[in-house]
Image: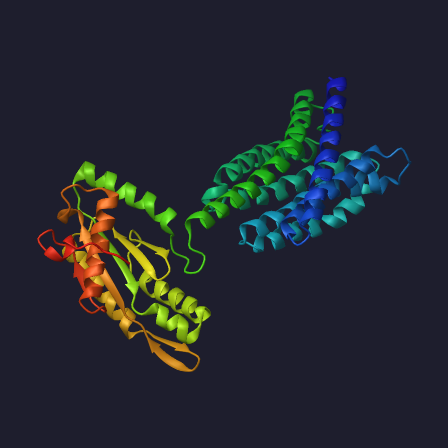
Length: 396
C-alpha cells in the first residue's frame, strides 16, 4: 500500500507542476484577466506546500507541521476569489473564506511547533474542508446556463472531497488518532481524491472559461452589436420554431416589419453617429414594450422585424399601434435639436397566409410595409390577400 501511496503522491506533484505551468502561461498571455491570475496564485500556494513537504533541506518544525498544511488551505481560499470573480457575485464568500483562514492562523503556528505532526496536518484537513465547502457553494449556486455542466461537475466533486476531509479531521480530533496510519483505506481514498482534484480542478476551470467564451461568441453571431437585439441570423431560428408550433397546433402568430421614415435624411443632416444613437434608442423603446416571448430583430439599416408568438392579427395591430405612437412621441436631442422620428409598419399573420412559410410571411409583411410607405409613411398597414396593392412589384 505504501508504494501505491507514494506513487499517487508523485503523480499528484507532477500534475500540480504541469498545471501550474499551464496557468502561468495563460495568466501571462492575458495579464489583464484577474480570474486567471487568482487561479495561478492558488496553484502557486499549492506548489509552496508541496515544496516544503518535499524539501531536502531540514526546515524548522513550524514550517513542516504548521506552514505547509496552511498553504493548502490557503490555496482553496485563493481559489474562492477566482470563482467569485468568475461568477461576478457573492463577494461575501471571499470575506467568509478569508475569515476562517485568519482565525485558524494562530492554531497553525502554535500546533506547528507541537511534537506531534498530527494536529497541524489535521487542522489543515479541517480548513480545507471548510474552504472547499465555500467553493462548492459558489459553484453550485451559479445561474449561468453556459457554464452549468462544468460547475456541477466541480461542485459535485468538491462535495465528495469535503466529506473526505471532514472524515480525516474527525479521525484526528474525534478519535484522537492519526488519519494517515489508523485507516489504510482512508489514506488510499484521500490520496486518490487529491490526484483527481489536481486533475479535475484546472480542467474544470478551463472548461468553464471556454464555455462562457463560446456562449459569448455565439451571442455575437446572432446579436446586432449596435442595438442589442437579434440580427437576421438570430431571428430566423425563432421564426422557424414558431412556424413548427403553428403547423402542429394551428395557433396563429403575427409578423411585423417596420423601418424608420426618412432615416437617410437624418444621417445626412446629423451624421451617422447620431443615426446610430437614434437606432439604439428606438430599439430600446420597442423592446421595453414587448412581451418576453416576443422577438425583435434588426434586419439592417433602419429596418426591424418583430415576431408575436400566439398572437392574432388584430392583437398584433393593437400592440403595433402603441409602438407606433411611442416612437412618434420620443424625442432625440441631436446637435442641440429635438428630433422626432416616425416609422412605417407592415403586419401579417398566419391567418392571412394559405401557405404558412417563412419566406411567404416575410414577403407579405414587406408588401404591407411598402403599402404604408406608398400611402404617405408614418402609418400601420396590415396584409390582406384581397388588397390589390400587394400585387404590385416592390423595387427598393
